[in-house]
Image (cartoon, rainbow, N blue to C red):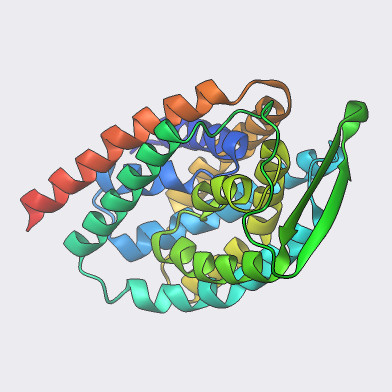
Length: 274
């Protein structure tokens, strides 16, 4: 792919990722597998590096808007680091076809979840946390007088993110596409706080996982990281503004439809390669 296409790919995935707290990798990884002949370990390492860049550059915007649960984000980010540093060693042992099938099924499952769960409605009141172990109460005061009050189980949230860190680095997707809806549905986070906190947490563990991938030479620094990264930096700022000002439901539905197409394409690709 030439640099204009790589930049456009970064711009669109960065905006999507920051707007819904997904980091962009859930779209970037399958597209790189479909559109290029890059091997899965390189795709995973390159994507996770870009996800880390997207999270690092978009988090300040969320912090300035007061939407980040700093204590929760730090807890979730640190809990995910062990898994994110182990997964790069595992991905190299997976056959390309198996990797595509697993990723395709994961993406299709996410798309169905997004289309059926009503995720992306920030106006909806946050549900009461489903789990009560080690529950803490949180109060977030955002810009323009917005106040978010909720409670959640810190130990279970940390345990969940420990597993998520492994998945995120294995596929290079960042894991925000799983964590954000789970923070809303299972742990009672308000949607906008979940998006912002997810991106903040991702800046920690995605960077750690990307560093391990880089040590294993699983990162295509040029042209992929450079040109896609340029697009992601700009797209991340656009996505962060959209998340704070625009109703998210239409973004979620569009993302879900895109994921259906991508997931099916990955499964078909794996079938013909086997």
